[in-house]
Amino acid sequence: MKKLVFIVLFFFWAIPSGFAQLKTHTFEEAEQLSKENPKPIIVFIHTNWCKYCKLMENSTFKNPEIISILNDSFYFVTLDAEDKKDITFNKHTFQYKPTGTNTGIHELATALATSNNQVTYPTLTILDPDYSILFQQASYLKAQDLLEILEKIK
Image (cartoon, rainbow, N blue to C red; front, side, top):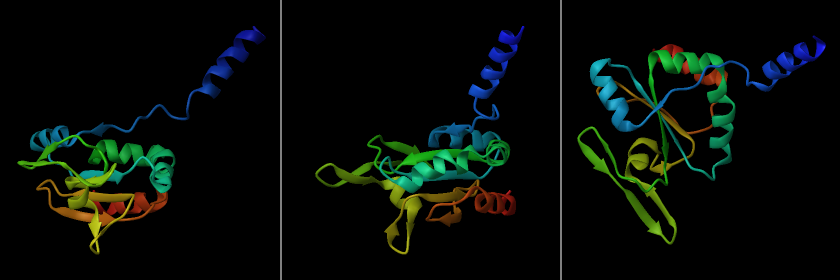
């Protein structure tokens, strides 16, 4: 019996806290879903080499309150600014634009993350259901800061 209790306790300890998963969408999915059920779209613009982007992915976006609000009131899209795939969104096809050898930026990242004539990572951009920019923050956001922003917008 003790062995069974130990196994059950170990099982619950090994599972990450909370079963909630953040629903992520592609731009195409978010656009289609928004036509059926209009909600703001949150776009997290990042790169795979950005340490603050990774920090947000592993802390801010793991917060159960944030997951709940994002899943209920928004469509959440992640955009790797160096992704080379074409993205069709709002009747326009955006492409990756090389800027040198093994470097470049996606046109959509430029469109959504440019602030003061500069693209900074991470950037969180919130789009209205009509796809206009409602909010843009170019820096790391702690969970509490993001919660305050989401509460004001939803």
